[in-house]
View 1 (cartoon, rainbow, N blue to C red):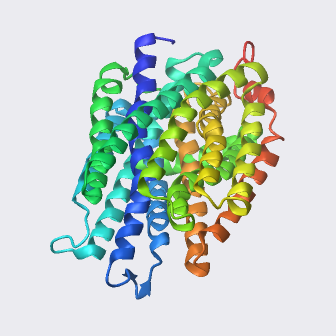
View 2 (cartoon, rainbow, N blue to C red; view 1 turned 180 degrees about the vertical axis):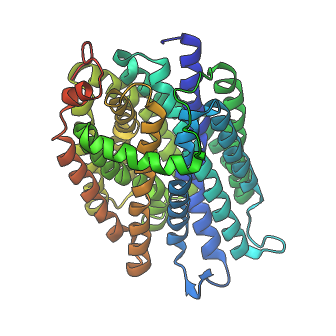
Length: 442
């Protein structure tokens, strides 16, 4: 444990894949699809229903998450029962990067497909890319307990997120320069989208591909069963085991999947909200995301430091109070670009810290040699519900035509998650799962 070379390789995968999260999901693709839909001479029709332009991207994100739920049971089993954990992580990363690069093809009046066909192609590619993104994360997270001792997991998990925000921010800075210098804005956006895939692919190969070590499988697959069948059974087994043997871990997981749903929805809809409700131009949106990235780099380290002083659970609870304030502010007070940047600064403080500490805190509560199984379930639980927020948001937009009204629902995720998290006994969860709480700030 604590091999510096391998830890660097692990943390730098956040650097690699955050380009997709930042440039594609957060900054450019939502507003780009919105602009394409609004420029189309005819509305996009799906099953005979005209789809609101602002609802297309959230619907696509929800679809990708629902598909992940079908695949992740098998992936967790592969990680635990085969020698393929690293190879599968790399394979999904490369598939996601490839789909992202192909977004360069999406443009208005696209040959053969037209504008609406281009929108459908963009939706299909982002579904594939986001599906691969989540799949790779299952294997990636499972490496954390293998390479880092319990007393350092909060710090290393936070460092990974911090590197991600820095790497994603640097690429976004380069893309901002491109958008400011090129006269053809649409072409600049397409190049920027593709650059995220190139970044993801290149740094995955340079760091985790070269430095992560594939260890022997922890367990052998029972005779007479397949990986998929055993994966489905293992989900039921893991769920029952958590409920009966590790009730505090189970309670924490429920709290996490609720408040994380709110976080994921904010990430998905933020820039489209700013573009539609406030009329913020693409350049200012990129400046906003860029500011958030670099402030989140410091915020992730800050929350890692805070967890070292008061414990990860209390630090996460503080972040959820701030997230709640962000949603209230967005609904009631957000009307100008200046106010948007003020809101972005508050969001940046908690952006990475809440997720980094959630990951490391969960790693303290799971039994040894079952890391991939439990992190697979962690990812299944997250993905199994994180489509609800975007889908409800998209449905509210479809019904009301207002993103401002739709955003009010997100406060429920943060408040409910906070209340449940407050009832989690971290020390008891560690003892139940056979982990030593000595040296861990609780």
